Length: 377
Image (cartoon, rainbow, N blue to C red):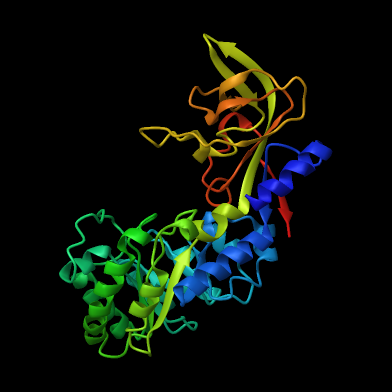
């Protein structure tokens, strides 16, 4: 909200200051979110790069993500090939070229299944390989906590596959640096306590399989945009984490929890029209620049309600408005206004668009332009 209050006077006083559609990111908001989340957790905090891969923003945030950055593709690795922050490679489909590039860049590779070790064996002895992180499937927690609401997924390994991976690492003389565990997006508040309690019991079993100490444990993330407003007892959680053996370095990861509230999407109204008492504002930005706002993947759509900056008079009809984009797609509806007015030339500012909104967007359709980017300190 603070960023919106800064944007509103800027657009009112200088309507041409931003070329829409555009994203506006705040470096100071990223830093505040990161520090607040890391302090709340009391562990290392790794940034998930796929949430927002804007290179200029990453350059300006280089002093923030000192605990590490998680990268999920060779393209992302190429963007972050340099820098002091540790890099973690995490992709179940990583091929030989990707793994070769990861080794060359001295990144730590998160192994999703034993077959990836067979791809890597050609590199053993040719150049140093950073300690590997083995990814566990959440099903391993069921031995200690049933967790009936956990959704099954294809990531990581169960106990038999983990044993195979450890055995193969020993055969190839590859060092295991730790394990990675992630229960899913938006799942932190629901499962954090039970996951940590189960993981506490898992540690001894993992160390038996490793035949040595477990040095690193990534407990994943799953934080939502407004984690700071949720009723979660972080103090209790920190006390629980303090029960882990002192030789285990704990970490969490986050993309949405750090970036979402640090970014806004701004679009400008080109036309307005009414069809059978339904009012539409046709904007210069839509699903081609911000696919998530269109809610096409949701069975029941709850459109975001933007903040309107009026730039014209008269303001237009007061009522319910649907905001549409430019993609010639009937599903290209990105927002809704209730009991409000909006007119040609007005701006719509959408909050919480700093994570995934720009990166998780199908832009090639119709060769429509991508959104501009503005970064404020």
